[in-house]
Amino acid sequence: MTVLDLGQVIAMPFCTMLLADLGARVIKVESRERGRERVSLGVKRVRDGVEERVPVAQYRDRNKLGVTLELKSARGVDLFRELVKRADVVTENFSVGTMDRLGLGYDELKRVNPAIIYASVTAFGQHGPYAPQRGYDMLAQAISGYMSITGERGGPPMRSGQSISDYYAGMLCAFSIVSALHYRHRTGRGQRVDMALLDSLIVALDNLGERYTVGGEILTRAGNVSFAGSATGIYPATDGHVAVAAAASNAVWARFCAIIGRDDLITDPGFATAAARRDRRDEIAAIIAGWTGRRTKAEIVKVLTPAGVPAAPVNNVAEMVADPQVQAREMFVELEHPVYGPVKTTGTPLKMPETPGRVRWLAPMPGEHNEDVFVGMLGYTREDLARWREEGVI
Image 1 (tube, rainbow, N blue to C red):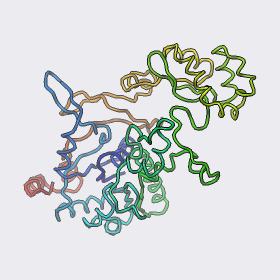
Image 2 (cartoon, rainbow, N blue to C red):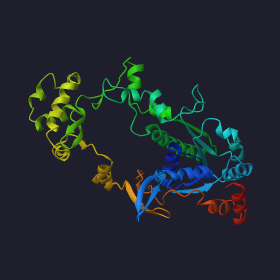
Image 3 (tube, one colour):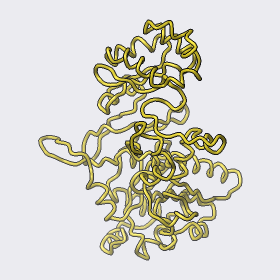
Image 4 (tube, rainbow, N blue to C red):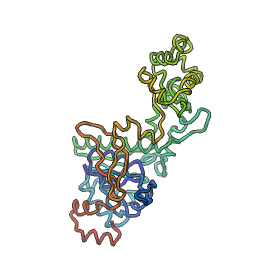
């Protein structure tokens, strides 16, 4: 499968990263200016006594071929159309209408290649009153209600710590592309994928939408205690915090009460059932915090987990990278980059015995594969490349 990836920033690069991890030939297409901007931002690091910046987007653009192409030039548009004839998928996350203005919208490209699958990720989708507006993850979090349920009870709405809608939308877009490829395999017909950051968050709200549409209930921020249960949340430890699900069921609640020496709570009508415990959320949180707050994270997990009470340390990023489960799953791998040397980067979550995801190489430098694509794939010459470079086409 060949994918022409015009994606930028997070959502679409993440989508095509998943496809590339599974072996798709993903060609990252960017202007020289955009390419320079991409590699100019990064994390500071000192290597061999010299300070350098390693681009933080390394893992989202891994396993891809990188070409430079100026789509605002007529020759650049022609070359892109030639690539479309040989491609299976085109992906982009520009503002609505941008590709149409370049003469490279879906209606135009399906004339070039009727079987093409054309995928877009935008903030609000291709239609609706908000469609023409520029938008980002924070706006999607705000409109979707996601912020309204995040934060401390009584406190202000709070955004997720990372651009969560970009990753949700990227995953859903990759799933849609694979589904569209399966449909094309059966029918020979391509189609358009229209993915919105906003939509991706609404489906991730669990059943909070239905709690309103069916029952008229509007849930809001509950802090670190779960909406669904009164004894599931984040609690203090002497060296940080732990996540504990002490009442996933009545049986789990009974185990937890026995461990902390409160067998009386197992039979007390005020605590014995899930419904009763839900009405005593604050009281139960205080009981759990009173027990965890005198112990370390490791001690709490060591006691609760073998007894069948779900618990885990709340890791910071350094602790997460060193976590034995993260290590066992190979979620960080070290590769050699031709410019930056050894770089440890996020691994692939795609684990399948027959077709496993793999991190084969790190993000390409801008235009690194111009010759591979324009000469090797389209059949042009190195002289053509030199001329186009002079003219600002590539």
